[in-house]
Image 1 (tube, rainbow, N blue to C red):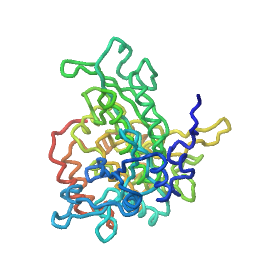
Image 2: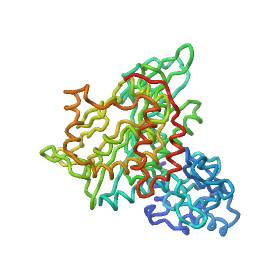
Image 3: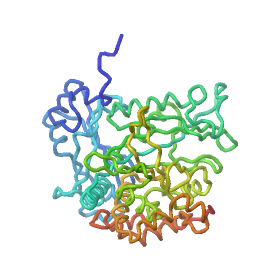
Image 4: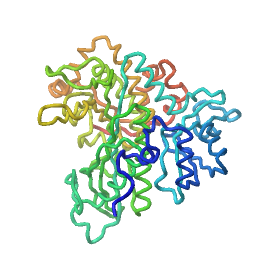
Length: 467
């Protein structure tokens, strides 16, 4: 028997309510709770560490439900954002749910409605230390200063692990790209994650298996296999939230399946690591401005973004490469950038301009993007996307922009490799770069000084790893 519920739009709540999420009201969500016999309500949010947090409720009646949906609830800010300037003696903050973010929790044993929240001070203003506040302020600053809306997406790479069985005879390192079952064991889980993400309303694009594969050894009797889920372009705050949520989905599915799921930058030296490549597309009046003209030229918004990334990529590692394994991944090569460069199609460049899919008539079917290939799975997506936006605004102020872009083109770097700037090889170098450029990120109050101070405190000296 065919499923009686339609399949499009992908977001299940949009199908049930009958309108896009931007138009959902409290009445709409109350009706879903009533008709679907939902017994739990979860307020989810991103803490200072970048991890997803949850506060659960059992609505006693409709008034209680409406009170939570409209007013949210209090929380302890000093515990959620430790070391960032919130005193314990006055640490109350407010969680305020965003109705458009609601979804039916696919993992709750009882019907549960979840909503993502913003953080607010007791006076109702956005909490400065909140990752959600920071990325939204950065997004607004780009629009105000540059006249463009920044869209972004994440390529979420991950490894799945399980113990070998007799059927596991096909895997091989560097041979798994776009492989299908039975040549990969994680296909079913990856497809379930993709379907669940769409059901939740996450902007997913596609998914596939990746090149990484690690055989069992004396220290680890499991097989590790790499996959990727690429999301779709959305505004910065939504793009950051989508990364956090798809990682949450994957971890839950792996746990339920008796597997392990890892987003670590490197699992074993000599093997492919997991990046978190970010794609950006500045737009104006709905037009994407990241592509090359027929003459091979870039428009100004794209030039400003590339200038910001090549000028401040080392400091951006404080937000996007946060563990010792980050430097191991970069030091191995394996299509990870080691020098500061940019160029079309170059998978070893820090910044790449990917090919644009076109139909048989030559018409573009995918928007052009600028891919930042430095970050990895240790990234804090909210802070990283906010920091990239700040770097882009600063990129507009570069004195000799043409010379900078010419000097850092892939072709120029290949001709003069000894003159090229290398990416940092230790947390000590990253800390020095962040300290030197903290004014770029703190500009117009986007990053509070306490957030930068907390980041600097985590960048303890580490062993140098040659590139």
